[in-house]
Length: 567
Image 1 (cartoon, rainbow, N blue to C red):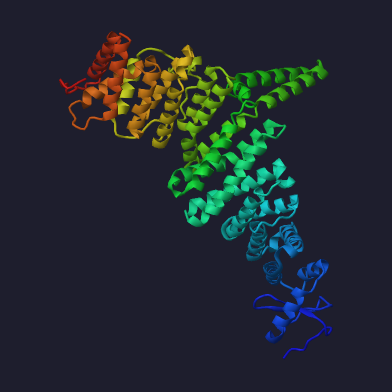
Image 2 (image 1 turned 180 degrees about the horizontal axis):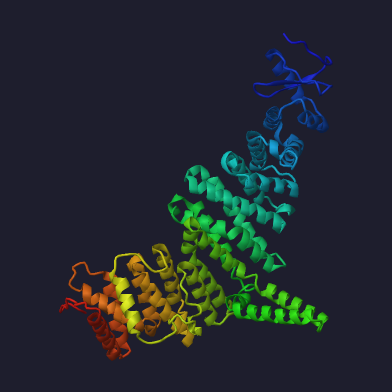
């Protein structure tokens, strides 16, 4: 039997399987026999133990972290609100010290998880306490390390953050934009990792926490005085994870209401990228290449003049002014840069951009039509920019005569021959993969829905549409249905956009007309052609495209099995 050390009148706390002897000398803690536990515990609970004494007991160095947690849990279970202040003070300090730079290498995963759960338990039972910036930083550190074995700790910290967001009034620490961005960024990355691994109902808490964070982030965006900073941080820190998470959620819409709410919250954050504060800068971002080249050239010339000793002060001031102008109008390009880097990375990141492209375009159109800020020509330029990401379609500069031949209007026989060969071969070709072509089709359907092209009377845009139609047919074998769907949408937008490629389409139809499994999309395109040209009373032009198709087939030595079943 162990020897008891201490003063005669001492008290004890029962902590489950471990019994600690809390005497006047709090540095001496010993196990006590079970016979004394109940009596001493009741004595302690009946007495008015000073808060400072209990706090010192919880901070005892001779106790392990697990033992201190058991003591804290026991006190909360027995006395609850009466000891809430001292327990939360101890738990917050314990967490902050655990995630300090000095102690981070020795973090105990199980202890950290239990500490976050302990704080969540207090909030979950309608308790409250002061949430400091240091505690939010500790939460960010816990969530940021939520990979592998640390994942459970990160999820526990996210659950705690959701409960904090439900407090009224909201803690001042969560009104600090940089802190919240860091927390949302870390939470999204954990969400992508967890949900990509396996979908389980136990992840509902994680999904709910991420939804609350994004909703609060949208609210906090509107309170910031620097919208450029908000835009830049959203694109550089959050956009990639949001698009990846959105892709994962789209395939799991049946999982429940919380999952759909998270997807809607992501779309709301994306919508804020095109708010009225940012829309005017899209013009310079989409048309900024010429301006930047001019500014850089001007700076170079002035710099040379400075080097030979002419107008040094003026040269320096002009260069600085040019740099400031470029930096002032280039922040919107962070969005385009992020999308481009995701596409170039390939894999899930590229597919995430493909799936989100039509939503990006639709949000852009919704906001611009609501605010009536930009001309419709800029809407078409944004569409071309998205298409360049989706399939590397080079349609942005064809109207300037870049030597590719795409800027030529009308029917080009050699181009028709090339397109015919591509469409008749079963080998994959072109520059756009199957999923990318589906994304292009979705974007063009949005353009048709919003009547983007009808509002534009620009010959350059017509030339770009013709170039796009040719490049789409080059990827015909990659996804025939999507390519023909795109061409049908282009036909409805402006029939002249597809007129140069119609001979190739007719040629394929002539060669396949005897095949029983004639492709429905191809017949649908031809029906659209006949309906459009008949409505415009231009059937002569349609017949000319058919004759040109027959001439090309003769030159290629192809004898089409003509059939009276032709449309």
